[in-house]
Length: 301
Image (cartoon, rainbow, N blue to C red; front, side, top):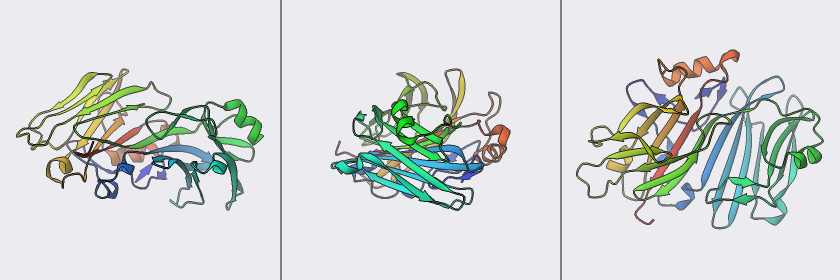
């Protein structure tokens, strides 16, 4: 799939105006492992050597500790730069790595030694992750801005890298909750999903934003895939759901998929293919944001 003229691997891509099927290999295997819960991937669009580039930042968490993977994809969908950091190894909680690519050198700096974490795998504060090219901060994450500039010796301000998609795995029985932004640098909102399917003749799906119900789907066995437009902070957001695996999949290996996509217009939501084409145009690159949520159902919780 292409977003903003860049390839996005493993993000759902089959959307239409009247329905949705949002599934990939991530939702069909490994559902009985809690590792699926502790994985968040953020996709940033940035400028690298004068052209659009995707930067995938994946935060993970398991019984041994935290993990971080940073990967750069160019327009051809290739990965000229990839760094995997296992922060449970003390020596890896702070460091740097450089790599020569065709056009020059890419540097990655990180400091997670004092990072504070919540229940999820992403750090909340006291950290930085920086991607530097030619002394320019292509991407800067975290709140230790001063420390990042000192370490990287970057002279130029961060480029206008934008968060354009986020994918998260959560784990539960009948209820699921997380926090989400529906646009780059937008307000953080509480997202909750309620759906009891075990032994229920006519299950109902409810989605709430900041404890306010925004989507209710009755007769779910007939409407296990669909979409609906809601308003968040005055911005139209299209909500897609695919709960087929919850209803008809094997127990303890069932992940439903939800997607919250910023609409391009209040009057008309465009299908994903049309959205992708618009985002390839430089003047439209700021349009559209997708939050993809994999909700793994298990009776072990």
